[in-house]
Image 1 (tube, one colour):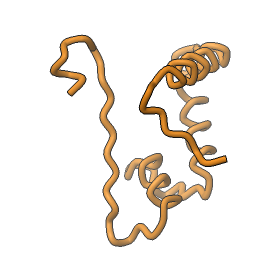
Image 2 (spheres, rainbow, N blue to C red):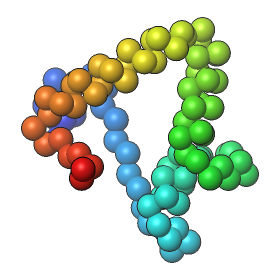
Image 3 (tube, one colour):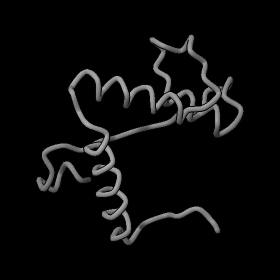
Image 4 (cartoon, rainbow, N blue to C red):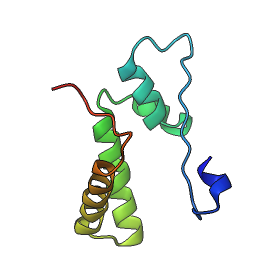
Length: 90
């Protein structure tokens, strides 16, 4: 729907399937975060895998940590203005 509006140059679409060998949400996240090309890593913590990918990105493109932190802050701030925001139960 966002593409059809013409208001965006770039959109991101992500999809998760639940193959029969994935038993829980943790495994779904590992499947999403770990492309088949590096599946042998089999890290028990998908946050660690995301951190490794961020470190590789920063190294390859000479990006300071502050730049990634800026993106996180910006995205969280934008999310707060989203009327369809879903938050975890407290």
